[in-house]
Image 1 (cartoon, protein in one colour):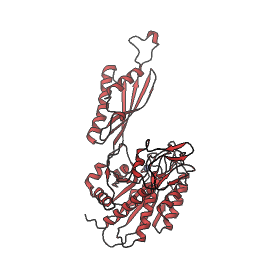
Image 2: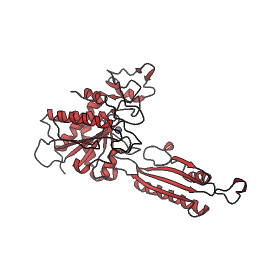
Image 3: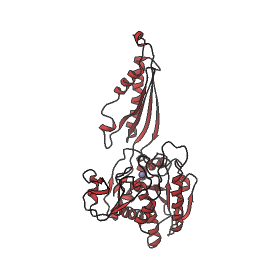
Image 4: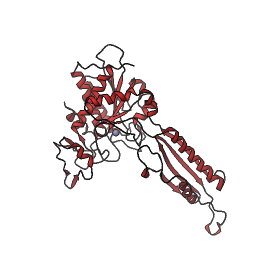
Length: 407
Ligand SMILES: [Zn+2]
């Protein structure tokens, strides 16, 4: 089976995860795919194929050399985004893309004018949707690449490699992919998520993240008799919001610039709440931002009385760079592998988090490598077959290089 057929088979499964679910995985249909994948891994000759009741699927490709070679891993998620339907996907292949508009179906056009990324893939074979669902290349392309690489290594016994572990998990799109990941059972020195976008992407820096809930207690009095007595929580909420720097928001920042983001507000005269998320790549500046929130609370309380404003600030996740920095060989290896496969590396900071960040803090350093998909989470998602093949080659090369890796 080639990588395209493998991937197309995966898209037949609706594996959409659900934000508001209490169960693990968040949707039962994800398990149907996990079962299918388990059988495929067994059929392809992988060992220790194990699917737990939470939908985490692990498998091993045994080492084919003697000696002490680090065990490394490759990880992808099989759920698709709750933002767009993943049911009844009808993938189509555009052979030798000519650089023009692509008619997905009657009245639905994908144009390079709107999606300039298309221009990077002229002449390639693109897998696209029919414009009514997402494609699920995020992250089934990653799964196809990993499985294909394991098959390739078994068919090319001359390529020396250590023990390779692979894992496929549910619920990444709802931020729960790493929660039930058994790092100990996985047993790798380090691993890679194959979950990035276009060819060459390599990510090992993400935000430090916290949430801040600001509560404001007002005093309600009949408006006709309110002078000098009423404290309007709504008004104080807007006053608080103005204390934060207006040029440090998502819409005014990029690259390594951090921000405060007001994601919600609720209010009455008596009570108001502001919900913020705080983001910064730099740990020091991240801590400063949280302290700044506290100082704004103090300032408000000096003016309106102790206890008027309170804040609950909670850390959410941290920048994996902190963990990777001490082990840069994990990155150097990928850069070398990409170079040997003729892929130009594109290293950039993620303005968000990844499963890999959480895994890194659970003791498994885990940068993110491209899987080739573009325009995630919507009907214009596509993946060039050549990008999947490149990713597959990079995986094989990483395994090969790790085999001569010396500490
Ligand atoms: Zn993904």
